[in-house]
Length: 392
Image 1 (spheres, helix red, strand yellow):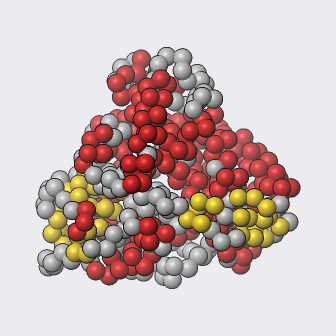
Image 2 (tube, rainbow, N blue to C red):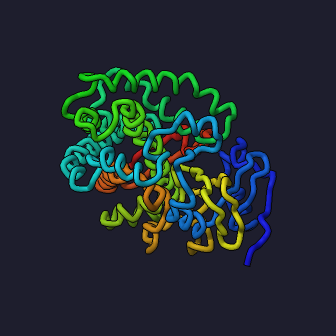
Image 3 (cartoon, rainbow, N blue to C red):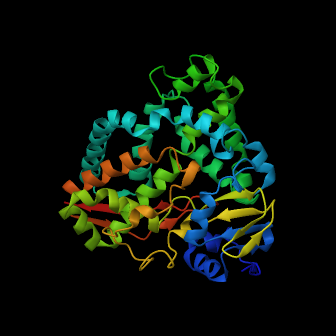
């Protein structure tokens, strides 16, 4: 049965919707499987099953026309694996993702664990600290740039560049425009890093230069592919780590469960990013006419797949808005995407988060949190600042 596509003037990119998104998501889910966003000439897909199905039909819901909301910025961001379809995507993903495979990541598990324990000890001694600047940002910035082999130059700008890159996937609003200077800086930096000798020889990113040398990838693609190692590896992890502190601080009973049974850490992290998905969502373009749960989507339609809504869909999850570290199906979330475009760096993000949560569980009895201030950002759902005290 084909149903009429509902439309709405609701704006998921308004300040109010960004700061408090979950009622808007519920409204979109209740309106239908796909809802036309009048102001953006796009459709929002907000239910879990429909987002999941779209992610697993990459021949219809294509990434090759970009994964942002505006055609202009999609054209500018072309060339990265996230904006490609198989077989080109498969080829580039194999090169970029090689050091991010589980077997490779295991080599660094012990050093990441040691850094996590050192940070937790430092923050316990400090007393009060900021969840974002002192915890969620400082840890990936102490791990990721060294693993990838970035030089010291530019590291103080990585977070600003990552934020601007993700903002540009939303509409061409003031948040996007404000990031244009940072994006210009980033592209100049990546062009310099693509030169021989710019990157550390023992880092993961150097493998891309080697692939260009042997002809596996083109030299022209190097700056864009290096950007795949920079932007996605930081902002989403920062969001997940700060949200973890907030949720465990607000739900001490759930923290007690993790402290009592640290083997819950992987499932607890899944529940954190299910409930507070770091990426609100990305778009796809419909390559051929497609009916999605009864809604006709003609070829050329731009659809916004809302991960943050899907992961709270009451059609999929029991007590969807509750935080439960023992939730049996927490791993079914799509916070990291799914299908051929599932996040390449999710193994690294999990390794960092598991190390920190394990270190906290071993030493911290209670996580005391203040009221969080949330970021105004087009794509990333995250805390901007929040006071925390760790009680031992």
